[in-house]
Image (tube, rainbow, N blue to C red):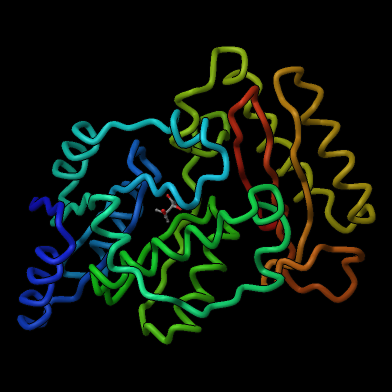
Length: 280
Ligand code: PAF
């Protein structure tokens, strides 16, 4: 595996690979890699000749300075795991260098970022879009891979690629879960024993929503799921909402909606866990 720290060196190398006709696959990460990230690599290797992973804890997408300061960092272990899993290129850019490449961008996400993570973390998706666009410019991928755990992020990236006409094929990969259903996340490492024991209640509530969708009005279903999660004293729900899976319009009645997603964010102490499930 080759590791690059400087954007221009990576770009030159990628240029050579593209001239040789290689298909470039890319999955951006913030490190603290787990099985979920490795499933992005696996998917990438299926359709691309060269797999590129980036590790960059992007400050512009954090709205809480403590969350940024406490975000787990484990570059050495991450690099070893990527190498063992057969990743071809690792890109670890420097903050100043990568942001120095930034040019103004006129992309609007409108209603896509008004609710859910966008409402709870104002500015978050603008930060994600800024860095993903910069990373795309450095890596010039033919295909890119993102985890569906960040469902709203997937829709934002889709919109970014469409509006900037980047022509990158996007793949959204299903969420990997622990045996008890907890969605894998780098933040899980920070849970204490009690919080970790309580956390599977999030997925249990999502499953309950899936089996009861259509039986109750959305608001009642949401209320019941929030109550189920908050039966665990270690958990506090930020939001649990049903939405149209394509537009993320909150669901008022389910009459006309062909595809429904439940999205949730839950606090375990200071740690914020997100998850989602397609209900129909
Ligand atoms: O999903 C993430 O880890 C981040 O939001 C991403 C896409 C790497 C951008 O920093």
